[in-house]
Image (cartoon, rainbow, N blue to C red; front, side):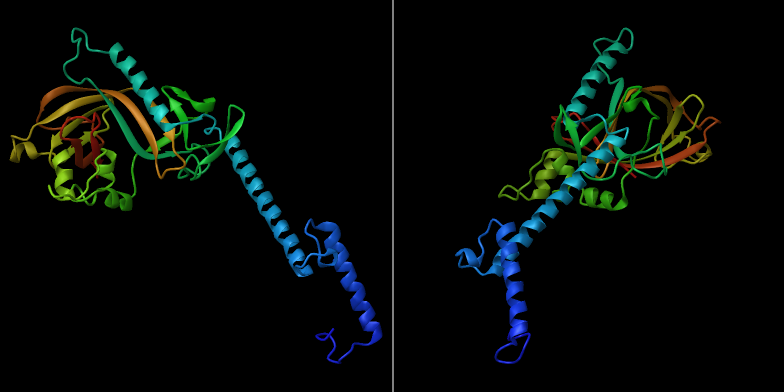
Amino acid sequence: PDTLCPSPSPPPALRHILLNIARNIAQTIKSNSTIPSQMSGNKRPAGSALAGILTKKNREDDRAAAEQSASSSASATRSNPFLHNPGSPEHMLSTFLIQSWSEARRIVPRGKFPATEPFVEIEARIGIIRSPYGLHDMRIASSGPKRVQIKGRPAIANAFLISSGDDVVGGGTRPTFEGSITRSHFVHWTGGGLSEPSPISDAFGIIASASTSGSESAQIKKELVEVDSVETVYGGYSDDNRVAFPGEHHVGDVITDPKKIGRMECKAKVTGMDIALPAAPYDVRLQLATEKILDKDVREPPRGWSTKRIKRRRSYTRRDKSFAWRMDVTE
């Protein structure tokens, strides 16, 4: 009343109106809140009770919004035909290695069992699985983990099986795979080489720490091997063959450098698996392939090639050969 009316005492009519408003507010608080109002003996003012109502209402609104968002996310996951087979990426990789073992035993070159030289290669490439629907530059799924139903219970999935062998999840159109990473990731992941701890050393399970025996760089170089190579590859032949020359090669080099000899090889896919990783920056393609050298003495690439690529590659392996994989970073 002192705020509304500067006089020491408001007029009787105005005071009657203000008292009625106060009673209505108190009655509303008492009937709609579990927190007792000041009128029922609580020492907190009625304003605190009203604030409690608003806080509770805000919490309910936030919870409803979160549930709606989760429902929308789950609905979007269900509507995407490629996100119907969630699982663990480690389990998918293990399954593929077992399948590759069986396939490799089936195609062992005749008369060469047990095999003493590699005749197949298992390759895991990182890149983007692109959707065959909509815009061609769209990733198969939006970034971030997905809420799914696993055995009737809600769960968070980080990986989805897209294709295995000739089978595509959902029986739809096979998506394309673009094997590449961004230049910023290339620089960030490989720029330090073996001079400092990096994602490369982490990938090989090397925990480097400065000690009295040497620096972190010395410890990493002791356990990892780094090899640089440059290769020129001519491809696009109708029979899927390709010709590779060491270093940078140009047609006609046989005249100026007759000692530069290439090889013709054929790389044929046996089986593969595509795994979408929406929670990661990139997806993964696994492939088992045979790689046969058809001719070790190629002086000039035969006619029929349509592509030429200069591959600058940096490869990493464990010096003690305790890790079966080799990491190739190709520019």
